[in-house]
Image (cartoon, rainbow, N blue to C red):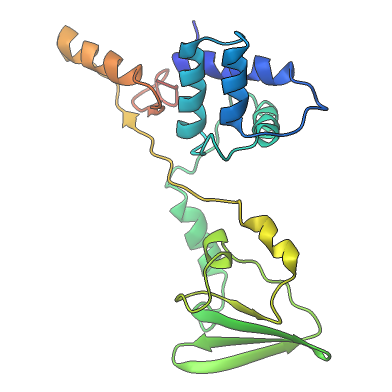
Length: 221
């Protein structure tokens, strides 16, 4: 028997697969509202889809495109139910990457990137010292929050001349917090505790993984 989130996901995948590839993209919230008006889904399914997208994907249903969701769902099928996690948390990856860096350069703060006829100059700060790097070209990779930061905000990077109009392409991109709960297996708690756990698990827009020994560990609740 499938868990509630698994049923929601399988039903959503079914509807996405039946969609017309030539249909213009639209927000997910608008799409499922149309499905509901057409009688293709029930009220409960509509709420389940909203909870799944808002909880599992940490996305705003009014801003998430239907085409993007379909692509993400299709990609998730490639690895099936396999899950990969670091035993010591993702901080272990950050520590490993940090250990490979030159300690003298890990505190550099980018400031202004200037493009001219003779190449590119990157102005930055290291501690209290202003430094500059010059090259014919530069590849700049920034976290989304830094890329979208307004000039003058601490940590913001300024481009001179300003980036062309295609920079607006990243404006719709957002980052948000995904809240997930981890419940250890209830070994002893009586019917009252079990009932409370069931009520919590079936509440809308909540998705979390169980801890405890196998076979419960890693399962959706």
